[in-house]
Length: 340
Ligand code: CP3
Image (tube, rainbow, N blue to C red):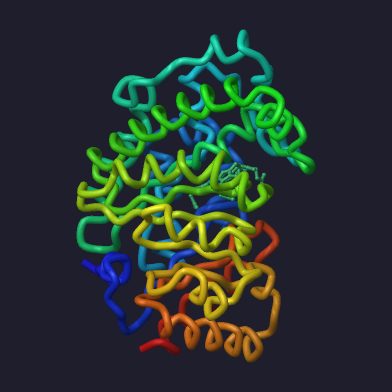
């Protein structure tokens, strides 16, 4: 098996440097569009054969060094009692949102084996199909990021509802976070038992908090999950989007690998993180650059990555539907060539 990714997760400097792309299965790939044209997004997530099929597309088409389970961070919120739907052009909607004790009382823990069996079945199919190829990454949202969706009722710009709860009703906020943390931990443990060989915890919105609030209201819950998964033999990646200001706190998360968005250079991040394995961090929009300029960007990130304990190449956030699939393919080739 191509184990570059797992070796780098464990702190080994590899040649070439492994590369995968956040959201690597998605609308920028015509092969994904073809499957999606016949199936809505949630049905796709809930149909193991189809979810496995689109998971494998970027492995076959781009030649990435890891597969990531095709699903969504919001999936485990449904068996908790949330009402999730996806609307074209508007993203996810959770209706009604959680704003009061009474709303929270309607949510409950989950049993992953019965409640999200389709995710576990997708993982089992993928391990079978990937056998001698690349490792499989499982994932979840971090509790703070999942809470933003539950409390805001979807995507937000100001995040006024979650911040209001955090300051106005801290007991309610922390009770909700305890519940989400328990659910997420059992969900990730089930993914690992089913065969996930690494896990990534996405804290997409934690960067909206000040350092102090992040340390009090977001980090402890993510850390509780990451620490509880230690010793299961599976590397743990923690990614905070727009988290340059909280890197010193992130260092305390207990993760094996720290994911970086593109705003902070790897060299700068390492000053705050110390010796660690980093993953990242090309701005997805630089994939619109012509090849010669893209090559220079890749080279620059690879050079900075050499100063880390080990480096896994990735984008600084998910790939966008507007990006030509050929450019993603070129990126993977450049990373492999320039780090060989
Ligand atoms: O990386 C992968 O290829 C694995 C699959 C994956 C998806 N979502 C598929 C998806 C992963 C790891 C996610 C994580 C996710 N989902 C995050 C954290 C990562 C991040 O981007 O910061 C978040 C915040 C979500 C919530 C979510 N799901 C949003 C905001 C949206 C709408 C985005 C949009 O562009 O419409 C989704 C839908 C979604 N999740 C799609 C995919 C491929 C697009 C669905 C479609 O086909 O229409």
